Amino acid sequence: MEGKMKVAVMLGIGKMGFEERDIPKVKDNEALIKLEYIGVCGSDLHYYETGAIGDYVVNPPFVLGHEPGGIVVEIGKNVKNLKIGDRVALEPGKTCGHCEFCKSGKYNLCPEVQFFATPPVDGVFQEYVAHEADLCFKLPENVSTMEGALIEPLAVGFHAAIQGNAKIGQTAVVMGAGCIGLVTMMSLKAMGVSKVYVVDLMEKRLKKALELDADRVINGSNSNVAEEIGKLTGGKGCDLVIETTGSEIAASQAIDITKKGATIVFVGYSKNGEMTLPMSIAINKELTFKTVFRYRHIYPLAINAVSTGRVNLKGIVTNTYNLDEIQEAMDYSISNKADIVKTVIRVSEEK
Image 1: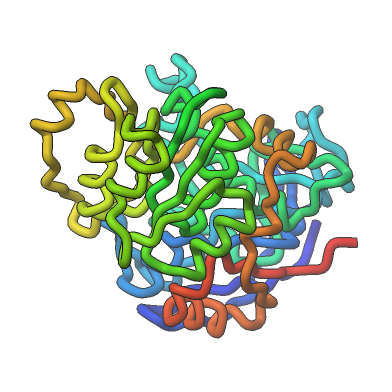
Image 2 (image 1 turned 30 degrees about the vertical axis):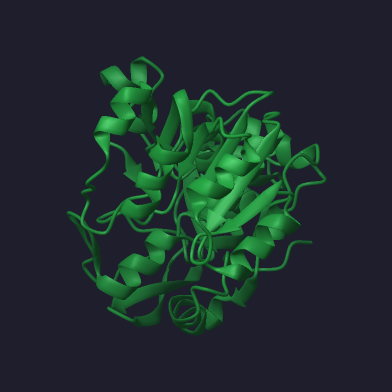
């Protein structure tokens, strides 16, 4: 496809603008996607607010956004799994395919991964993107491209639940009711976990967790989390905790509220990358610690969970903006973190 497209670019800390660029050319194994919706991730906001995440530093002009859903408008000559008109969710990380991690199936750990909106790789706050066809997953008729965009964060939630070996009969606690905490809670419920409790400090987020079918919520700002979980579990503690906040306090509470032999899955990054934890308690309980880095082999499962009604992805969307409103969308998301669960950018309307 020939022509130009609008691209929203980060021009500096707290400053967005627009450029006109060529519509990408598709390679033999790629599809050209007309983007319809793109989710705004916490990492996008962090880059926008500070200019860096750890060793990844933005060099403007830079394109943010890595949660895309759209429609196929062109395919390369070797593409067999897609056709023009297919509605798709895009998995944003291209891996090398030949390292030990790719070959063993743990491709999310590939050291050569090129991931949308992770410097120096541009993201997808734009009208079109060319992407590897094998990373474009067809959506059922009853799953919108907006939900397709949100398969990416949902994949993190399912990967966390799978890392924790979540199963029926368990009691689980999710620390944090932001976007990742909520999709994790819904993933646990979809996998049959019997009771899922959610802990947060913000009442509006806890209300959203209840709307999305959490069994109970606890406000850690005015309740003793360990005491409340003790009451809910008959003093036994929970089987599984998934910690999504990156808070040292929440991580310490996770150790306190688990029963002996339980599992804790760490998803959230702390601000400085470090934590001091009560390891003597963890050792005495013989706890298992697991961690999560993105996801692997999750998109088909996550799409099915949405299609069959096990997960209500639309329920996490609190704000929608057009691409032209990208500056307002980013600024509002930064300044109103207590009120926002998920902001979505509408690039074009789904027909």
